[in-house]
Image 1 (cartoon, rainbow, N blue to C red):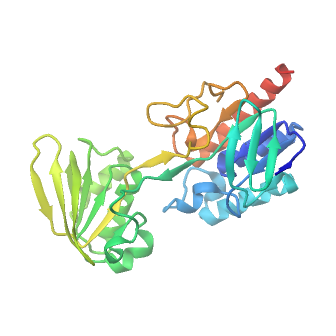
Image 2 (cartoon, rainbow, N blue to C red):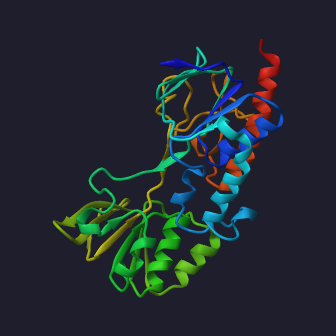
Image 3 (cartoon, helix red, strand yellow):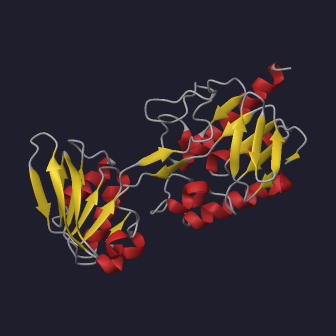
Length: 307
């Protein structure tokens, strides 16, 4: 394994938070290195099924937002390395390993983001494609068919509305007593006669073999079971933070994210975290961009005070 010269900071992940932090670090003349596991910047933006609305550069669509990030990161040159999957981090020793390289660093910024949560017995595309986690590519296929959407947040509400617009009768099933989506989306859902809300309920079983024949759900409070004759299921059951590399080295919160203080410092003095990987993150691109900038400032403060 080849040892690299030491850096001031290694950023793990080139999503919105990582890119924002790296540019700020570059501007204040820190020796920054960014390691990205994929072949482009943007992180989870490609997984956002609807146009990002709260970032000015995204007005022309999510692809335009990714292009803008790529243009901004061009100033980093070879400080941004693609297709570099980090396999090991030793925070105490200041070592980051990726491929055949071992990078030494005075500080680490973790911006590994989150991944969608999936049910073990219901992978994307199962039951002949009748089960999905991303509805947009399947709108034409599901049009007019009875569909169940699981989840109570913005994405679930938007998917239910999109399916209803194709003529599908939609059952929106969520565990909590109330929808947690934006108020305007909740109002639209409840005004759409093609959407039936089923609160306080959970999925028990997918029924069928090659194709979906229905689902069994149950009410949390009463335990009552019910069969829904649907021909498609859209699952929007949240996300989980990517913390595998640091799970045993940093304090995590009750929800599994990296615990940080107001300056985005973790339980290890040389390690910082920003974006969706942070405990209690408000999962918005705009938030990640702002946290990236704040993390860069906090890293600079730390480096000035450390030998």
